[in-house]
Length: 176
Image 1 (tube, rainbow, N blue to C red):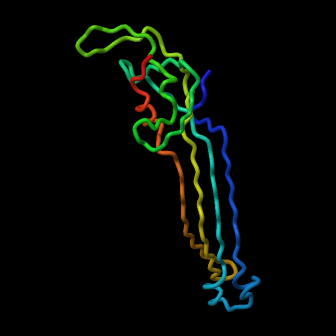
Image 2: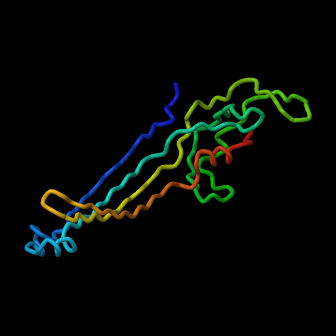
Image 3: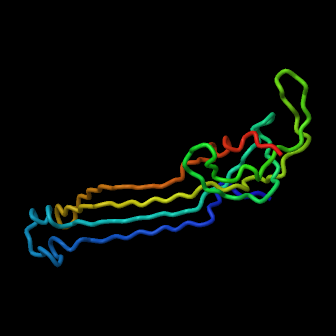
């Protein structure tokens, strides 16, 4: 049995909205005219945040038959290196090894695996994801029934540098 590629174990999502108390009918400047309310009233600030764990992905040996999975020779240890520098692995590459293979003897140095690797599908999880969005909204009440909304947003996100594709590259060529 395999884990779905869309499996996200944990997700925290939150949002906060705050209507600033300025303008017609509010605590501050509550009795101003409609044109003045267009400037001082109708302001709102919003904050949203999402924090989630990483998604599973497949890795391959990268040798001889790129679609073959490696053997799992010890438990997967997540080192969580994200600098992108040599030796900064997301997971310990010594947890994996090439399955047995038979050299072909041809000039191309190709080989044939004698069996599939023991690592199952989607057994490795990538880095998580964090994002915080802050926005300001201005509601301009043109009439009692009509409102013009203006939005501005600032977004900060943090995804760890290693993508699953990059992690596959870091693990290619490991052998026992």
